[in-house]
Length: 73
Image (cartoon, rainbow, N blue to C red; front, side, top):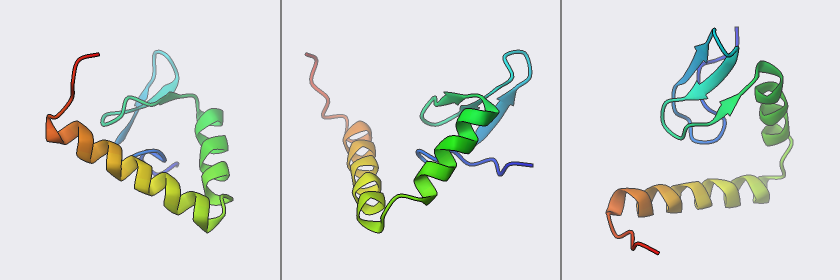
């Protein structure tokens, strides 16, 4: 069985049997089993520089989201 962690944010994945898709409780990612497998493979094959950049962007976004400094646009 596939581990139950989101490849994007590390949140918990839940399988929706009706839609036959996985959804993340944290970021809302919604994928089929094949899409999830492809995304995980892609993330594993990213060069270290790209992986670090992506992790840094995700951390910055999470900090911004939790800070409450969002301005309406």
